[in-house]
Each structure stands twice: as C-alpha cells, then as structure tokens.
Image (tube, rainbow, N blue to C red):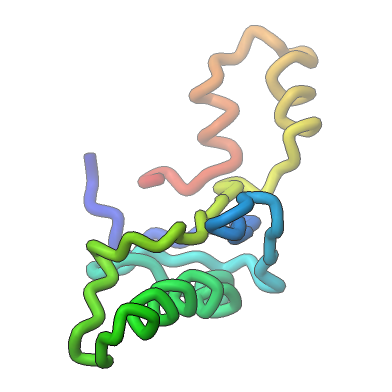
Length: 118
C-alpha cells in the first residue's frame, strides 16, 4: 500500500481506561493526521495525556527516572485508543450498507467516507 504520512481524516477518537475499559474520554476536535513517526492532529492532542500519564505513573512507581522511561515495553494496563475513522455512527453505516442502491460494494461505500489512501 501507499505510505500513510500526510493522510488526514475527520475522526471520532476516544480513549478507554486501561484497567476497566469502560471509562472513556472523547476528543473535542476531529482532526487526525498520520505522520512519519506516528499520529498527530487536534484529536490526538486532545487525548494524548490520557495515553501517556499511566505509562509515566507506572515508571514512577517502579522507581524509574525520566531517562528510564521505556513506553514500548511498559507493563501497565495501557489505555486503548478507539477510533471511528469516518466519524459516521454505526446506525448510519447500517443504513448506507442496506438501503438502495444496496447493490453497491462495501468498498464503494468506504470510498465515499474515507480518504483514498486510508
């Protein structure tokens, strides 16, 4: 596939609590951008602290310093990012996929809602 850096989308982004997976925070803004090093954009900036804080706390609890932080191997129950890539609700997708012209392929419906490279 094509490289993703530079692809942007208007998404609905939530972060589920790592321990219970029930408590969620939702981004106030919808902009999401793939970069060469990961993700960025207003929605990511709205919620990034929900993803990083538990990792920092886990490191602090085991006596580490800022230089010791290894976010990739952290063993904490990390929060989970939940992304609705199109920003379209489940009910609307159900309607789009079943209401005439219902003969359209799913990929055709996805192309209507998502950036081509995504």
